[in-house]
Length: 291
Image 1 (cartoon, rainbow, N blue to C red):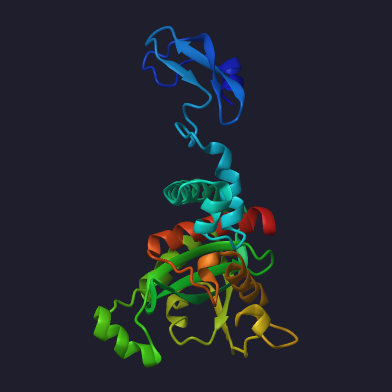
Image 2: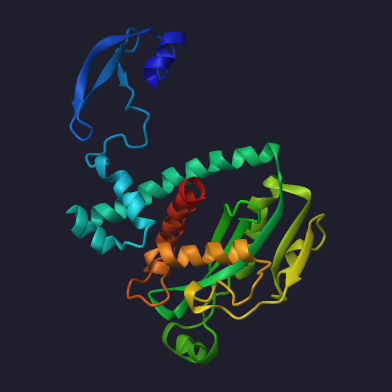
């Protein structure tokens, strides 16, 4: 808080001369229904308050931020959220971008604790979804801590359609780039600072995965995949013991709590950037509240 900082160093943070701050009235914030103290610098004559350096600076609907954050991570769509809170759809879309920035900064601070105590066991794999239509699929590379089920990182990448949809996709939208390799590269680049030198990585038997751990000190073991259960939307397996339970359970939770990731839904992702923002919200919600 700015008031606590002023007790130790009553200097203006924006003034090059380091002027002294003195009280300069207060203002009433309607959204939170409380008064905010304002300060003025004796040198530059500019005013400052606790709200000056907040991420919510200038917002008039900040009282809805937590409700939007909570409901977007609880299976509610943006349209239904605008109806429930009586807000414009554009407001919900802008709040999604703003909350994604806030959650990204909060998760960057969350990763700092792993620099002192690196992670030793990690499970990773890829999920599949689509943007606008199933003819334009997307891949989500995901890494999860095996012990705590914390989501460590994710990367969204485009991929070409497969199976009977491949020819239809090329005919309607042209050749689609395969960026899954770049997504996995970004995933491991972000994970390398928080992984122990002798970390143990687990994944399924995808033939592309051993190439990313080759030449490193990490130990990589592959596990044969099992048949998925209907209750887990295909992520949870029909076995008594699942070696990749932490990963598969987390993927099933993403399917259950992020509306655009439902298996059977008419809510689809229109842009990959919006999917990335939504996953940042759920990653923060998962790591701070659910686990």
